[in-house]
Image (cartoon, rainbow, N blue to C red; front, side, top):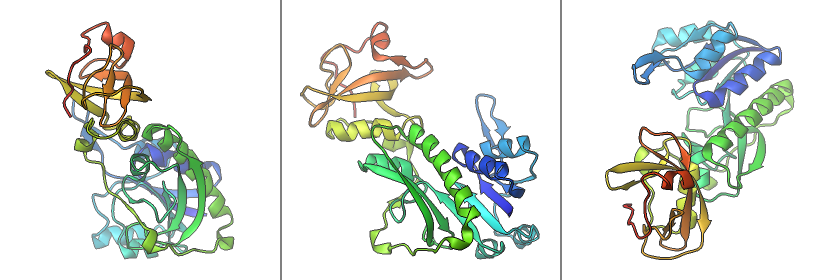
Length: 302
C-alpha cells in the first residue's frame, strides 16, 4: 500500500520499520519539529525523524496541520492509508479523510480504556492487570474511532519503559497484519460509557507520596520509570527511585525503617532497590548506602 506515516517518539519507530520491511511504500513521514535538548540545547530531530532518514524516506515536520497549504500538501501525496503512532498533533478532518482508507492509529491500550496521551502510565498507576494495543480508525474525537484489531499482554511488574518497548513491537506487527487483511476487518464501535481518560503526565505526579499505601507507591515507581522518574527529597537532595519492592514493616509514613532503605508508607513499606542522586549515576541501594547513607529513622518528605 501507499502509506503516509505519522509519529514522533521511540514508541512509533518499530511500526515505521515494520511497514518498510513488509514492502509497503512509505511515501512520506510526518513528525514533530526538532526541539532543543541536552546540555548544549542543540536542535534534536525526533526518533521517528532519525529513523526515516536512515530509511531514505522524505520527512516533513510542520508545527501544525491546520493551514490550508499543509492540508493540500498532505492530500497531494495520494496515500492509500495514513498510519499514525503517537504523533502528538491534532489531525484536521481534511487530513483524516485524504487517504483512500483514512487514517489508522496504533494506540497503547485496549480501548475505550485509557484514551489520551499517557495510557501506559495510567494503566500501571491504576493497578490494571493487563493492557495491550488497539488499531483504530481515526475520527476527530480523542481516540474515539472504531476498533479494527487488538492484542493483549499482562502488566505484571513491568515498568512504563519496559511496557512501552513491548507494546511498540506488538503494535508494529498488529498494524502490519491489519493492513494485510484490511478488507476483512469489521470496525467495532467503542462503548463510550466504558471510556477512561489518560491525561498527559505532569512531572509533579512523580513525587513519591508516602501517605499512600505501599502498593500504590510501588506503582508510582514503575509508572514513572524511566521518565520523569519517581523521586523524593531528603535534606538538600532530590533522589530518584528507579526500582523498588514491597516489604514488611510499619511506621510513620516516610520513615526509613532500616539501613536497606525500607520506607514506611501509610500501609506497609517499600524497599528502594535502585536509586540515583541528581547528577550522579544510578546505583543499587547497597552501593548508595555506602556513600552518603540515609540512616534508619530518617524522615523523607512527601
